[in-house]
Length: 165
Image (cartoon, rainbow, N blue to C red; front, side, top):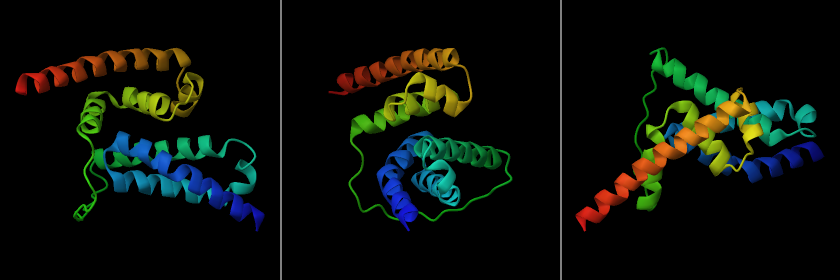
């Protein structure tokens, strides 16, 4: 029974953080929650073997892989998903957050993934490289390019906002 309690504590500690990161990547909260939930289900079935390793890294990598696989299937038109819209009863995000998410959406997928993992999840470059499956130098290059793109886009947004005032 201790294993299930340990997993429940693990789940409670990391689900929201991972779902948030994947939401920023996918821009679909339901999809982000689904892939993290699926990764958690897979982790539970392997819990005895992964609990002493790095279970959060394992779940993160699995969730990102699931998100990428789903995106590819949808892109190829093999998976058609129709979701009804539920009226949002919570306050909307702050304008700065909207601007950052919009700017991240402009980045190529791999750069966006690297930024989210490194800057939002605070993973070191080596771990980002491991999650994505590329060399550390590649991650550093992606992060540099992404920061340059984001800085330019966010500066343009700020200038437009000042001009409107």
